[in-house]
Length: 166
Ligand SMILES: Cc1cc2nc3c(=O)[nH]c(=O)nc-3n(C[C@H](O)[C@H](O)[C@H](O)COP(=O)(O)O)c2cc1C
Image 1 (cartoon, protein in one colour):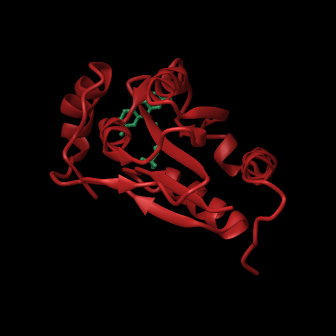
Image 2: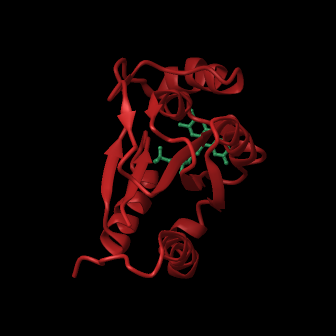
């Protein structure tokens, strides 16, 4: 069972969780980066606007082939109660995703609102089945039990034959 964890992280919190998933569950990590980086100001002024409109940034990598992966994990920070524009772009960049399963997670300071339901809807439209959704607010990201619950869900969705790197 091969897992691909795809994430965007502006300030490192989503990356921290993605790295824990890879450490515990194995598989590949794909960090999506914006070609044009955001400043602290433009993240709020332009990035939030783009997130609210459901727009996509130009990202690297521009194409993410998941045809060899059995399970996808996608992580995003919450921007203006939506997925970051880089993750909208990551969804568009997926190739070979039809029929796969995905576990979603979002990190936020307080409230994600419908960030993950909207991502789930977009993925369902691509014939990707959502096997779980996890939101981490600023307290949850320090809570090992919450992170363990996500990791357990990834292991469960990934099947019993996952080889865990030790
Ligand atoms: C541009 C911007 C918009 C944000 N909007 C929200 C929001 O709507 N709700 C929320 O709870 N947190 C919001 N946050 C906080 C981030 O979602 C939170 O700090 C997240 O864990 C950051 O993840 P990262 O370090 O991987 O970028 C926002 C942060 C930024 C930079």
